[in-house]
Image (cartoon, rainbow, N blue to C red; front, side):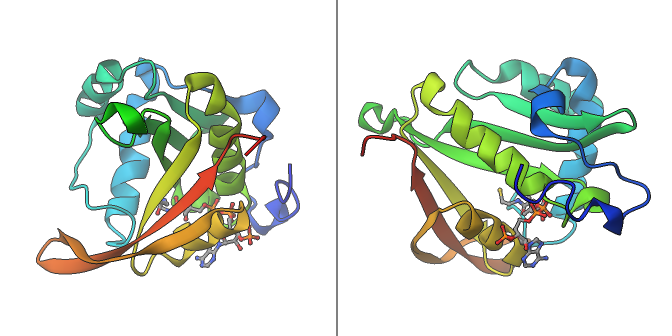
Length: 185
Ligand SMILES: CC(C)(COP(=O)(O)OP(=O)(O)OC[C@H]1O[C@@H](n2cnc3c(N)ncnc32)[C@H](O)[C@@H]1OP(=O)(O)O)[C@@H](O)C(=O)NCCC(=O)NCCS
């Protein structure tokens, strides 16, 4: 649990839990919290190209539609959900079947305390059992925390797509990061 708990004293409000105890597969009842955390990140303008709002009903439909190889996990404490993370197939092409795109979202109140690290480590450890050999992340320009998180977990920076998509009217570059999760590579 590198880092988790070490900086927990920064917040009196959030008790940062350990991965073993509190990461679980998302349930329909988590949909509202997942949507709220997502919308909080969307408002920063650097986390995702997605557009909100995402309420509980919309996220419940989204959760239910995800296949076995597109799981969502949440990390919670008795006060509620602090973070969610997901894997999804990177491409519809069968030869990229072992490549997944990862997503990690931590509520603003719980950021900077190691939760992102715990969630990304969880995705890396779960990926092989789902048939994935590589995780890829797409990090928008200006997302310093997203890039630091990936680098800190050993992801390699592949390169940067220029003007890859738009947030509102503004073109954004996207840096691609990757980690091969096959131990024998
Ligand atoms: C990116 C995100 C998941 C990081 O989660 P977090 O819990 O705040 O991050 P952690 O406390 O685990 O820190 C992870 C690393 O990022 C660094 N970091 C955290 N916040 C940072 C910031 N604002 N600027 C630069 N680096 C930062 C930490 O120092 C740490 O680095 P280290 O592993 O080398 O020590 C979180 O900021 C978030 O949810 N952002 C919105 C969604 C998003 O952008 N997701 C990433 C793309 S999928």
